Image (cartoon, rainbow, N blue to C red):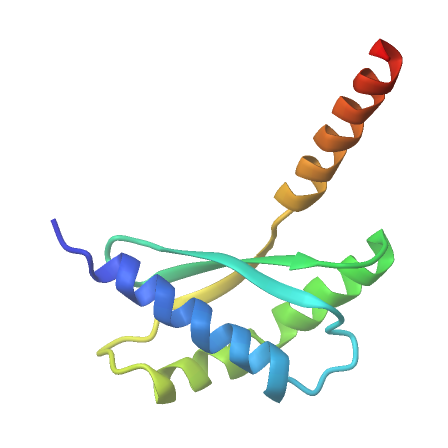
Length: 115
């Protein structure tokens, strides 16, 4: 079994994070963090999971801006990572941090009630 998808996912995560931090000039991209990348076994598709700080409106604006920047990001990935075919990228909102915060909040409520 090949480890290439995992290695490629890690490279895509690193390079995309750098692009979001330093190179993407769209003001709609707020505080976005790449939390993970899944690459298909045939290396043709990459799902980039992004966590966005802010209210629902800011998240929607950020996701729209990232969708618009997919072509730029794919082109840049092709320049930075050596590969025969650059995967088609798509962005997905990672809400796991919100779910985790909600669970902690509920546990704290239960703890307060028990005291």
